Image (tube, rainbow, N blue to C red; front, top):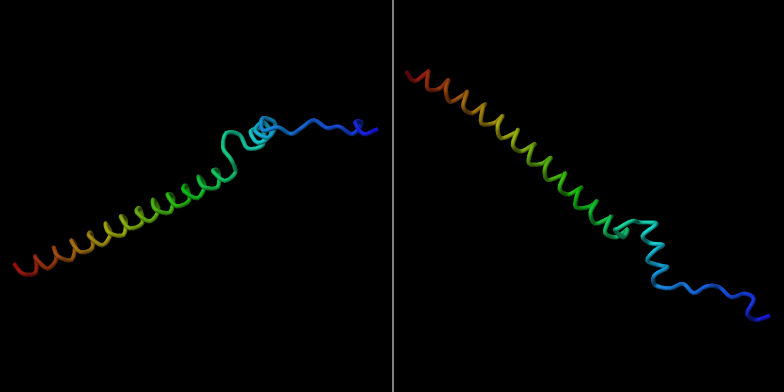
Length: 74
């Protein structure tokens, strides 16, 4: 018969429920965006730490050499 192969319709609520069960509060697109932002932020932090330590080392070296020069002038 024609009505024997009836299936329940897939409604918008069914789709929303399924997506929430699979992905939670956020969609896969938003999760990828958040991961990308975290990666970029981590790179910026690493770069700022590296540049700060390099600058500090350079300043220390310059200060040490300038002190030696001042002692030599006296």
